[in-house]
Image (cartoon, rainbow, N blue to C red; front, top):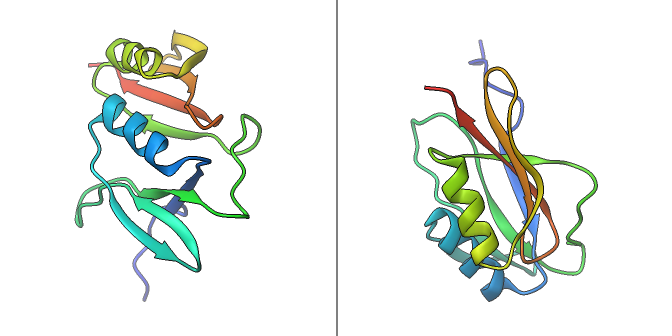
Length: 125
């Protein structure tokens, strides 16, 4: 019998300028990336550790990838939402939805340097 898992396993965030996008996410979240070419698309893979919770994905640049503020919304976990929002602004992002207590944690949204709407989640300790 197959082991049950959460339904979402991977995501891709469109990028117009891969170097700029990688610098933004490194500066805001301290992520390191592994660059690859997959199906003729430029990819920068987010960190992934086997055996831990959550999913991973990539920044993706190619003809089919169009940054947008509409559509699917990806939430990144953060330990300090205020600091992450500050780093986002300092590195060329724009706050779209300020820090808000939703009863189970804090959420916020920003626009990255590529024009994507990205959300944040911080658990209430």
